Amino acid sequence: DLPFYYNAEYVLVGKTLKNAFLQTALTLDAKTLATKALVRDSNLISAKAQAIPIILQLHALYNEENNYTQYLLSVMLPCMWL
Image 1: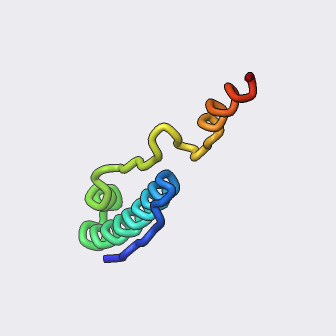
Image 2: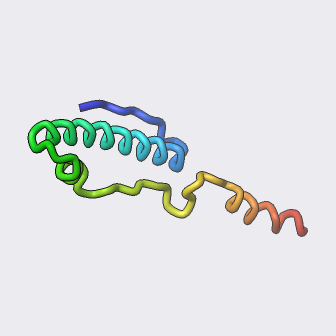
C-alpha cells in the first residue's frame, strides 16, 4: 500500500491529482505484473493481456483541459454588456 494525501479544497484540482496518481500507480503495478507474467509465459502479448485486462481512461468530466475560460466568460460577458 502506498498512501497518497492531497488537498481536495479545490475539487477539480484535487480530482485531477487523484486521477493522475491513480493512473501512475496502476501503470507501475501493470508493469510489475507484466514482467512476472512474461517470465512465466515468455509471450509478450499474453503477459500484457494478463497485466492490463481493462484500459482505463481517467479525465475530468466536462473540462478535460482544466480550462476555466468557458466558465469565466459565461459569467463575465453579461456583466460587460450592462
